[in-house]
Length: 281
Ligand SMILES: *[C@@H]1O[C@H](CO)[C@@H](O)[C@H](O)[C@H]1NC(C)=O
Ligand SMILES: *[C@@H]1O[C@H](CO)[C@@H](O)[C@H](O)[C@H]1NC(C)=O
Ligand SMILES: *[C@@H]1O[C@H](CO)[C@@H](O)[C@H](O)[C@H]1NC(C)=O
Ligand SMILES: *[C@@H]1O[C@H](CO)[C@@H](O)[C@H](O)[C@H]1NC(C)=O
Ligand SMILES: *[C@@H]1O[C@H](CO)[C@@H](O)[C@H](O)[C@H]1NC(C)=O
Image (cartoon, rainbow, N blue to C red; front, top):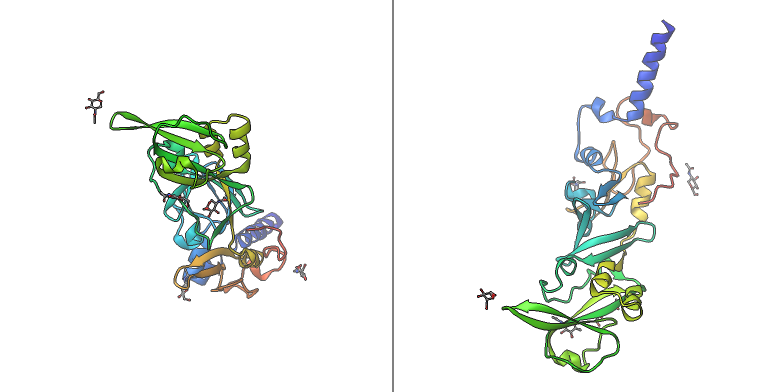
C-alpha cells in the first residue's frame, strides 16, 4: 500500500521533471514547437557541444542565425561565408573564435575559383593571429630569389605544367613577381604558419591546412539572457532578429516566469531551470 503510493508519487515526480506541459495543454503553438525542435546543443563533424548562433543542416532554420549554418558530413563540419565554403578546424565558444580553412584550397590548390575570398564583416572579423599569404598562378619562369620565402608549385593546363607560386607573408602587388603572373590571390593564414613556412620549412599544404581565425561578432547577451530564463536561442527570419523560444509562451527576448497552463513542475521553483545557470551560448 505505502509502496504503491510511493511509486505513484515517484511517477508524478519523474513525469513533472520532464516538463511537458504542452502534452496537457492540448495545443502546440509555433514557439513550443520551436522550443522542442531546436537542440540545446549539438554535434557536427568531430565537434561537440555546439550552440547558438550555430545550427546544422538537419535542424529547422529558426534554430540558429542564418549566417551560421554548419554542414555536417562524416568527420567534417563546413560553413559558408560569402558563398565560399570553409572547413572548420576548431571552434572556441568562449572567445567566439572559429578556426577555418578554405575547403577548395584543402582539396586541390590548382582547382580553385580564382577569387579573393572575403568575410561577411557584419558577422566576422579577422583576429590578430591572421596574416595574408599570396598565391600566384600562371607565371613566367622566374630565376631570381625572393624574400619573403616563395615556393614554386605547378598546375597542369592542357597537358602542360604551368608555374605557380606561394608566398608567405604576402608579396606586395607592386612586386615584380605579381606583374609576371596572370592571377594573384591573397589568402588569410595564421601568423604562426607564416613563421613555420619561412623558418621551419613547412609545406604549402601545412600552412593552408592550419587555417586562419575569425571572430564572430554577434552579441551573445540576448542568447545568454534567454538561456538563463530557461529558453532556447533561435532566430526569427520574419523579423530578422534573435528570438527566445520558451516551453510555454511566445517570448521574443526571454522566457517569463509565468506558470505553465497545466499542473507541472515548472510551477515549482525547486524544479525550474536554474535561474543563474552558468551555461553560456
Ligand atoms: C589581407 O589583405 C587585404 C587586402 O589588403 C586586407 O583587407 C585584409 O585585412 C588582409 N588580411 C589580413 C588577415 O591581414
Ligand atoms: C594530353 O595528353 C594525352 C596523353 O598524354 C593525350 O591523349 C591528350 O590528347 C592530350 N590533351 C591535350 C589537350 O593536349
Ligand atoms: C586579389 O586581391 C589583390 C590585392 O587586393 C589584387 O592585387 C588581386 O588582383 C586580386 N585578385 C583577384 C583574382 O581578384
Ligand atoms: C516570427 O515572428 C513573427 C512576427 O512576430 C511571428 O508571427 C512568428 O510566429 C515568429 N516565428 C517564430 C518561429 O518564432
Ligand atoms: C542572479 O544573479 C544576479 C546578479 O548576480 C542577482 O542579482 C540575482 O538575485 C540572481 N538571481 C537568482 C534567482 O539567484
